[in-house]
Image (cartoon, rainbow, N blue to C red; front, side):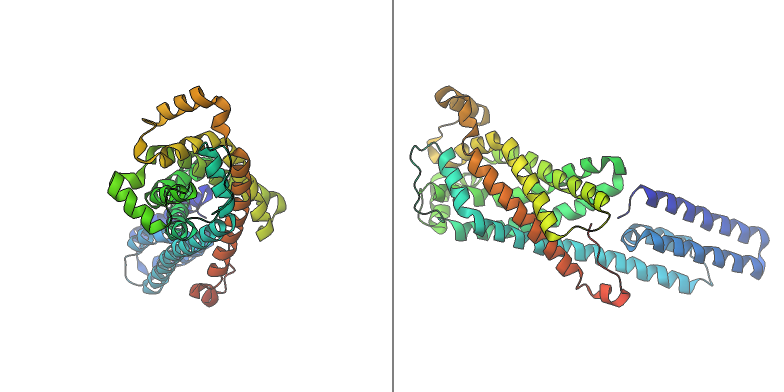
Length: 365
């Protein structure tokens, strides 16, 4: 990816081109022209060494610099590399959307019963009901698929852009910010999905269509976004911390191992990142659950009232209700999600048309 070092290469290239123009203006004639073309060809080779991924931005600048007669071949090569860079960027986003959607569906299907148990514990019920642990799964998958796809589809390009802006030693800030941006985008789909899922997990409705219809009739459209503020309060820190931990651990592991990581290694890092983040954000999850399942009863007036009521009536430990199932669920879920995500991204990248044409080996970001 294009990092701090890329800026140095581009500065050198700009100096080469500017110096070539000066010499042409000073000397004139064929000798100077050949000298310019030779230096530009060397500069082009340096540019190629930077990587195709930065051509989308620099290709335009270079084409403007090379706007004179006698360099048509070079300009065509640069334009071709620019097109490849743009196509690769689109391919990366598409691969992220597909991989994210697939990873989300696999995790949700495999671990839904654990999530149901966690929700029923947090809801404040005494005895846990073991029936209907898959209640609402079909409707939930219908929301998880586009939400996960949207999250990764926004996260990947945001991450790449931010890594270009921030220096290498602040890559963690780029990952944190990209995770939060992806979370905001996905929340538009996640929240209604979560509301319907948790109402069904607590056995308030028999089916997802009934849940949607009755929520709309009783509470209006805003009922589908019940607890939206608490959802963002939980999910933005969760997404930011989890993906930052995952990315930073992968970077450190890859530097130590001096190679690309295997799927099991990605899965282990994902499990650790998910479990730790899940434990840290459990109180936020309890608040979000209580606000989402209260329905039209309006037991709580808002986030702060919810916290005060829980602590007053049930004691501070109630804010950690469900931490065991949550850590287990998100730990295993993180392992599956990131394992499926990375393997799917690699599978798709290996089948890009330009990969076969150029003979490039796929490289994980």
